[in-house]
Each structure stands twice: as structure tokens, then as C-alpha cells.
Length: 120
Image 1 (cartoon, rainbow, N blue to C red):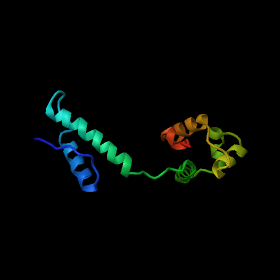
Image 2: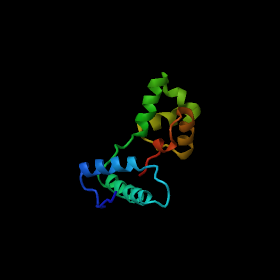
Image 3: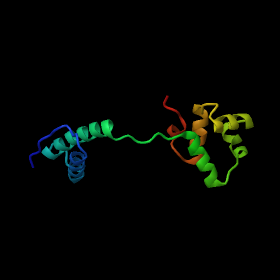
Image 4: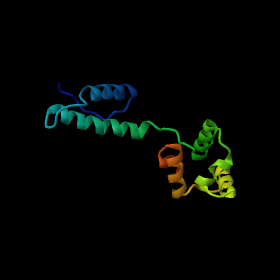
């Protein structure tokens, strides 16, 4: 199948590219389909980078939601975050989550540590 490659600029073109990408996703190396797949992946990524924006995740809200799910109180976070003052500062947003805290939160809540780190 001969395909004319163009920069993806519309949702319809994006959906068409995604459909074709999925159809040839397991193309064998060194085939025309593998080359087509490689180009489609670049075009799709370019479109997604430009037009699809995922909402920012607030790490404090994630912690609070996880606490509600588990029926936890702020004092239950002390072994993970530190003193009562540290926990209070983190939950109120007055203090940033450190890398060490993010690692502990990751282990405790079984979530990626990146969720707990600001990409400021």
C-alpha cells in the first residue's frame, strides 16, 4: 500500500494515522511497512506533542486522594514524610516534596515517583 506522508494537522488525519499505525504495528524489520510505521510514529508523536495536552497532576491532591482511599490521617504519613510539621507543610503546599519523600511515597502508594515531583 502506497502512502502519501503529510504532517498531521487535523483530528481526522490523526485518527486515520493511528488506525494505520495499529494495523501495521507488528511489521517485520526491513519491510516497506516497517518504514511506513517508523514515519507514522514520528508524525503521530509530532501531532500529539502539539495538540494533545494531558492535565497537570497535583501531587498534593494525589496524596490526599490516596489517604482518603486508605482511611489515613496526616499522622499516618509521618514515617514516610517526616515530622508532624513536615507532613503539615507538605499537605498545605508550603514545602516541596523532596526526592527522598517522592521515593518513599512511590513505595508506599505504589505509584510512579514522578507524580510526586514538580517539573518546575
